[in-house]
Structure formats: C-alpha cells, structure tokens
Image 1 (spheres, rainbow, N blue to C red):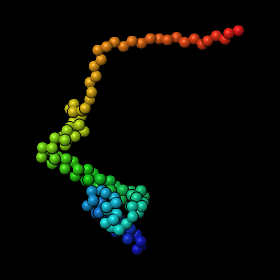
Image 2: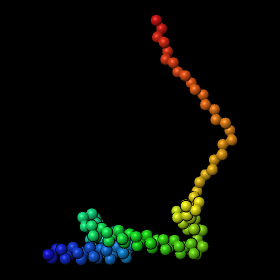
Image 3: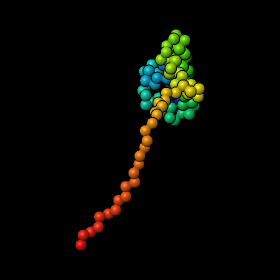
Image 4: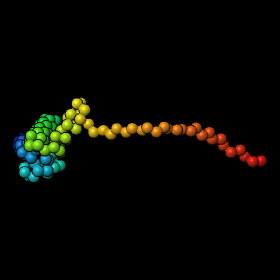
Length: 119
C-alpha cells in the first residue's frame, strides 16, 4: 500500500512539473528526481496518466500558438507568413510554383528486335 501512495505522489508531481516545463519530459523528471525510464513506464502502462500527459501537450501547443499570435501583433512578418502558410491554406495561402512550357514534346517509339544467330 505504501508503494502505491509513493507512486501516485510521483505521478502527481510529474504532471505538475510537466505543466511547468510545457511538456518537456527531461526537465520535469529532473525537477521531481525521477528518471525518464520511470516516466515512460508510467506513460505506457497507466492510461489515466497518459491521458493527463496528452492533455498537457495541448496546453503547451496552445501556449506556442499564443506566442505566435503575439509576434504577429508585434508586426513580425515571418510569423504572419508562417501562420498563413499553415492555417490559411484553405484560403489560398500556399507556396507553389507555376511552370509554363511553351515548347513541344516529341516522343519516338523505338522497336527492338533480338539479333539472329549466325549459322
């Protein structure tokens, strides 16, 4: 019973540390004094723990998107282009190359016949 409480406490601490580190496993493990193998053991064997970790990944993604929007508001052209290329595809914001070919294309059929044996 004591081992279960210790494990549950470690999982809880890992989740808190993961949230603070925006999902960076190494940072979270160092903060709580646990090795990465233990973390991945919990992640692969405990579906409830896995679900909570996966939810934290969405929080980290939301944070990154909010930072991108801040950069766009600050006039960062590169950030604006990135957002349009990734989220604006349906509106036509895609990179593409248009190639025009005004020459003709010629093809020839070459017939091959095997050599006859000389007798």
